[in-house]
Image (spheres, rainbow, N blue to C red):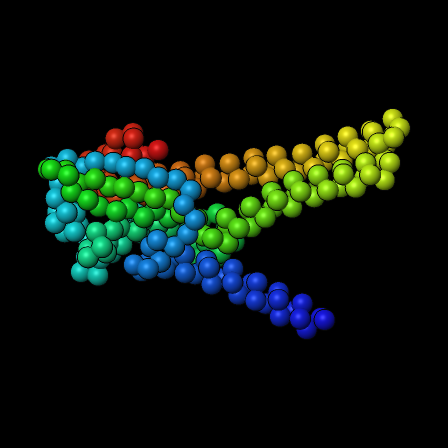
Length: 209
């Protein structure tokens, strides 16, 4: 039994590490890997795909001050990722990257961006809210079925259980929102740097949201 538990734990850790490593890979297949958490679109006027391609080196890399961009010319796609210290990249549970698909409309190039987080981050976050929410509900139902709410003292205990469950639920919600805002600010910064590298001008406000 202990051996099975150790194997399951090692498999779980291996899946988490593999998911994170593949998410960080600058490859065409990995560019679409991850859970979608946001979309956006921006138009670059008087700019052709060839001019955009020319900003990248022969291997398709464009080094930015706070991140890196990788161009896949055949797929008309750019992968944009903030730069993290190696240890922080593994400890931080909600890293983000952006996949940017290019398409031509008249004299303009339209950039369709998709924000992504690792699947392990999305699954663990969803599991946390399910465990807390369903666990609180199941505890209250079990407590009520055993007659715990039959008197004022039991009702007070039930209110305490509900309050504790709501506290953990909304604490997690606040943590996720703050983490998203912090990570989104990193993407805003590298998006600004990419726009400046492609056009030589600061981006409009709509691109940095």
